[in-house]
Length: 144
Ligand SMILES: [Zn+2]
Ligand SMILES: [Zn+2]
Figure 1 (cartoon, protein in one colour):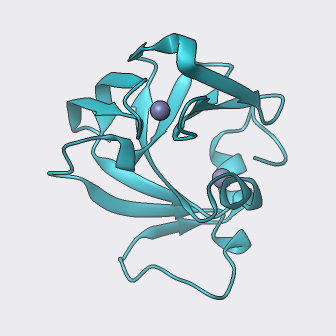
Figure 2 (cartoon, protein in one colour):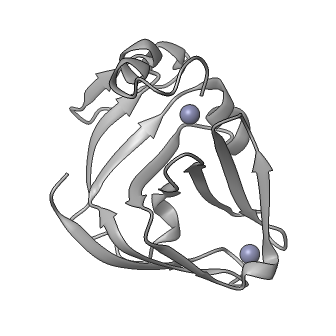
């Protein structure tokens, strides 16, 4: 993940705006049960590192979805704002928040083993199971 952009975005109602100074232009989909429960479908996310700032922070709600991660949302309109790993403050942001989609490449899918049968993406991507993913991030274990 070498290419980085300065990305601006906002929630649906505009109460929260986002500035991510080191967003990857590689987009991934997460098919895990929690992401699909959270958003109603696969979570399309861009890795944004730790350099993310928000305006309208008063409107941000945070849900502790596991011991190691939390999920943010706008309390006014319900827009999902981030999935964040607590141990290193890494943000994974829903790519649809950002206004500029130029140069984005959808190149990987994770928890492919939890993807239900009724849909699949046609893009050619690198696909990892949950077990593959946890093997890459050894300190983080078990569920998402
Ligand atoms: Zn909002
Ligand atoms: Zn997930």
